[in-house]
Amino acid sequence: MSVKSFDLESVNKRMDGAIEALKKELSGVRAGRASAAMLEPVVVEAYGQEMPLNQCATITVADARMLQVQVWDRGLTKAVEKAIRSANLGLNPQVEGQVMRLPLPEMSRERRQELVKLAQKYAESTRVAIRNVRRDGMDQLKKLEKDSHISQDEQAKHSDDIQKLTDKHIEMVGQLLAQKEKDIMQV
Image 1 (cartoon, one colour):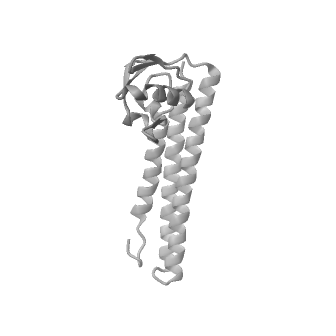
Image 2 (image 1 turned 135 degrees about the horizontal axis):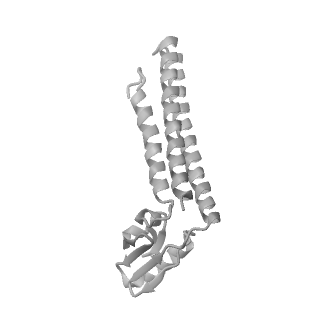
Image 3 (image 1 turned 120 degrees about the vertical axis):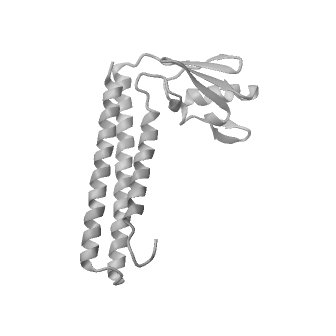
């Protein structure tokens, strides 16, 4: 980005990045079906450091209500089991050698409401991220105008553009959240 002009596309890319991060987070919130993405937040204490579960085991979906974790190193089986239990995902691993079966419990109304709250928390943090991108863009515009690189009219036009982008992305967050809430509450 040059010092003397404003790049609206970079603001758009950063906001799109926040939306993609939200999609990834929401994919890990279980809506009644097994998904390997559910185990993405699980971090295993292995080889003296913390590593994501998918770097020390293969995660597969056995059926709609069962996940299977194949641990690569037999010595890590206990650590993987402990990590899954302590991740507060409501999963109870059944260990058979280096393979763990994770049956998904039936979702109670309370659990569904907890998951909706979690999805809402993810959505709100995404909204904050989008607003921070907007603030950064506005600050950049004010600085460019103050340094006489752009006119007040250009600054006002770009400010409107940033606000339109912000509104569009905030609306996308609302749509994603509404869809996820519908999925979660569906019995």
